[in-house]
Image (cartoon, helix red, strand yellow):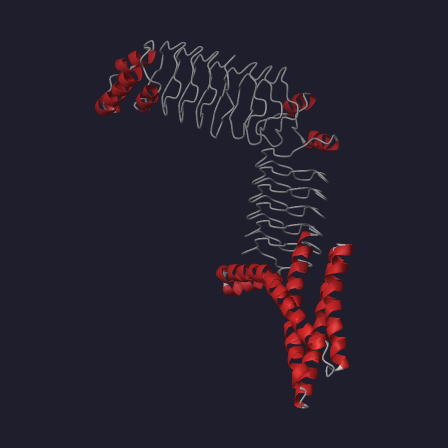
Amino acid sequence: MRWLSSLILWLLLQASAPLHAAIPRADIVAYVTAERAAERVPDITGHFGNDLWGSDFSKLNLAGVDFSHADLGDCKFHDSDLRKSTFSSAHLYLAEFFDTDLRGADFIGCSLDRCHFDRADLRESLGFGLDFVMGVTAKGANLSGLSFARCDLASTDFSGADLSRCDFTLANGVGAKFTGANWSGVMAKEFFVLGARGLTQADLDTLDQAGAIASATSMQAAVDRGVSFVGRKLDGAQLNDLNLEGVDFSDCDLRGANFTNSKLKHAQFVRSELAFAQFHHASMQQANFTEAHAHGVNFSHADLTAAEFRHANVSYAHFKGSQLTGARFVRAKVERSNFESAVGSPTPPLAKLQEKSGYAVHQLRIQLLDAVLAIAPLLGLLAFIIMIIAAVAMWKNPALHPWTKFLILISFVNLLAAPLLAVAVMSSAAIAVSLLAFLGTGSIVCTVGILLGISRLAQGQKKPEWPSIIFFAASPFPGIGIGAVLLNALASV
């Protein structure tokens, strides 16, 4: 029955818990420092933790205290002793740990959004850096020997911090501040810190020697070594004026990154986040942006010859003056994008349509096109069945005109030859040629066949000619269906 008594205790606390302002500081400290009773349920810490928001625990000895799952937002732990304390899965939004002893503390699973650890001693702590969100400061903190491997440290302030013997392997330091930090003995293999603030030339030399990507030189060396950037978080990275040909940035977070004047031929940006990135004057022939999220990206005056934007979102992007010869935007979202003065742009008519008619018309156009491409093959199949029935009905009739028989044969040959050629060669050029030849031949045969049938009707030959007119009237629909299939195939080649 222990669970029942625990539940009753929790319900009583729910009903009678005083407001935060009415809780005496001594009672809060007594509760937090008290040894846990066996009957206390786990939820009680979380519940009472809500009442600890904004509490002041400064200058207290709280060594070894378990704050697991507690809500400690905006709490102050100035100059406190928190050695080997546990903050596992706790919420510490805006918490302050100035001059605090946190040696051996456990931060695994803890949210540290906008927390301040200035001048704190965090040696031997666990999980510190695993869940930095933004705005964390550790100015003058002692972080010696900690592991930040694979951590996202973007926008963190490590000014004056002791980072000696820390492990930054594969971490992201883009946008972080390291003014006056101690880098002695660090492990920094592929630590991406290019464009970080406060790094002196001596710092860059130290980090480069430790294997970090801290300068344009080390970035180029990493590319030459074939270092993988797939899935890396590099938002805001300064990657301008670099030779990045063939580099794979697939699934990367590159929001706001700067690739101005860089060489990116054959580079891969598949499914990458590129919102508001800069590719001004970049050379990106045959670059692949399939399914990329490139909202608001600046491609002005870039060379995008034969680039692939299939299913990409390039809405509100700037392609002014860019080279787009051979670039493909199959099923791409291009609403409100600027293609002014672009060379070889495949979409100026679409851009004009959007300017005149607005986004709603553009969306309707895309939906109608998708509907036609989906329904046309089914209508074509139905029409093909009607053609076969009509052909069988009139083929053995001796009154059937020889030219009508010839046109029927040409129709069936045309229906089979064009898709067979396209499938056999399976290239965009072959599909395009097959489609044009098929539509041209089909149009001529359809027109001549119907005119011949009408003329024969005028001469009184009704029995064999009505099926022929039905046959040729139905013949364009298989053509439309095959055309839709070929267009879909053209999009996937």
